Image (cartoon, rainbow, N blue to C red; front, side):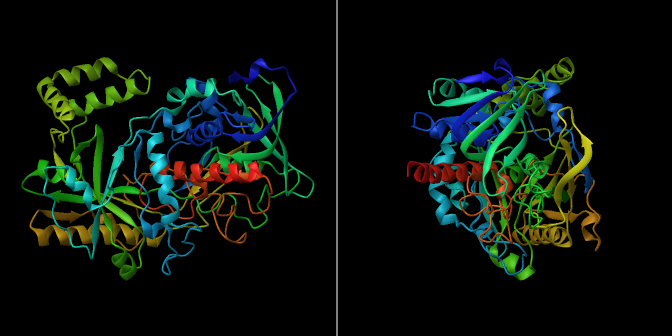
Length: 526
């Protein structure tokens, strides 16, 4: 059942076996996993079925440090969460991402890739990924392209695929409506998570709507699944028992915020730009767009004392490139949005209709597209160093519900820049050795200071702020995602990542979610 919580009487008390705070990819996946079981499940989603500016304004926050997105632009307060705007690009994390690396402080997961593999397999189905799919160099077996043989001392190929299920809130809505034991409440804003007097058990959560109606939810088990910024925000504002916030006696909640710093690092010169692009965007497998990248080898990371990273060659296109504009228009319609400047974009498409038609055909036959490319650049995406000074705290300002704004301080380090430089230099050397091109590095990357490219961005990937650890002194949750200091609070999503790797986080988030639901089913059955 799905209900607008505004339809309930004021001061209603809702009771459930499991209360999931957040109706994004995690909340929807958990609800599906618990559907038609003996457990009463309550999902609290702040948004509704449609994007609403008033609801989205509850995501207002402050930023400092390395320039970052407006916090209302990189999250979606709507049923389905940020799947409302994503592209379902995914891959499993690399094996080294789970390891404790002596040269990387605060690295190491309490779970291994071997433990995660069966959950990755299941997670692929949730967003319509092709299976079986090889994410390593075997990805090339599906294409009529002979890729350059980069030295494995430096790089290995890594594949990414785009799933077909993008908007979880729409795709799984009817299934969840018919689940007799699942109650999803829309427009339900959690403003406080209330613990008992000794702060080791959650008693209830307070809920309020923009219309001012208040409710309370009591449950045996609570799962906080509101994203890498809202998870710590909710824990920090819930300070009626512990002044520093829930589970924060070691001042770890909100720390270690990580993104995927992504930036152009220089120009790639080659005799055949289309051929070079094909090495990194070779086409489709089973109707799913595939991209590839060159990931740093474990040996190079250890030798250079750097982080993990992936490099890809990208085309620089004119802003009005017809095929790219066409893709943007289709993308907006797929996400139920009217494109901005729609008439202007139609005009841009009509300036080169034959290229657009040709690329549509190439898409149908699973071939790489041919854009009107101006030049090529090398894009580097790194895992961010786990850094306690990169963090989410609270502002003194409050939103219309009386909750303090989040304040995000994004802090990058010398190791982050060193990793970008190592990756770019290794690519340049390999290009020359293979005779496939020349790489000219941008000036900002050659400096020994913390100057960054003005084009450096994140991926809207908010990770690390309630990190997973074996020890309470090192993190907020244990390997089963239970808060170290609570007996009935679990935290799910990318906020639990101890390290970030270089891949988009959602496939790993879904895998961890499936692992958590299996764990909860086992203990709640007892």
